[in-house]
Image (spheres, rainbow, N blue to C red):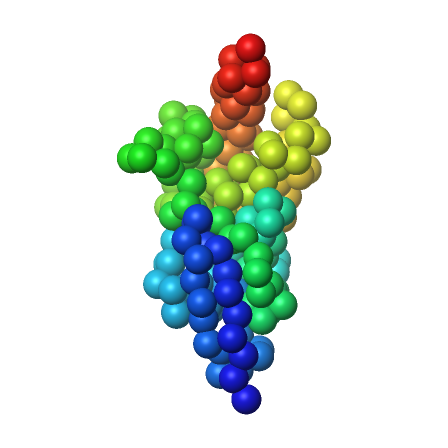
Length: 165
């Protein structure tokens, strides 16, 4: 039995035919849509390497069935930069050395974007660390990650204020 689903992935509508209802969103993104920036780490929802935004919320794509997200808007790491310009979170990760080997970086960045959009951490490093605790870094780049999130959050907040004026 086939299932037809439609997703908006990084701003582009994608119609997909699924031959198995058990296909995860992660496998759909990586294997069918060739968006390999989203990483398969533990494949059990414990490391956060597969974090994507689904309708603006952070989701571990390895735990999400693709069929259950019919009609959803998905943003992956590939969809953050606009017109050749890095997203402020991406730029901040580079500036603050928020990565070492880079394997977890896409999930960390997407999670940070979602976290900033949620607006629950203010400028409290401890709250940021807690809210990002679902994203593991085996290299231990947590200090740089926290600094990057703080800087990006300030830039985005200042940008929002300028745009509102």
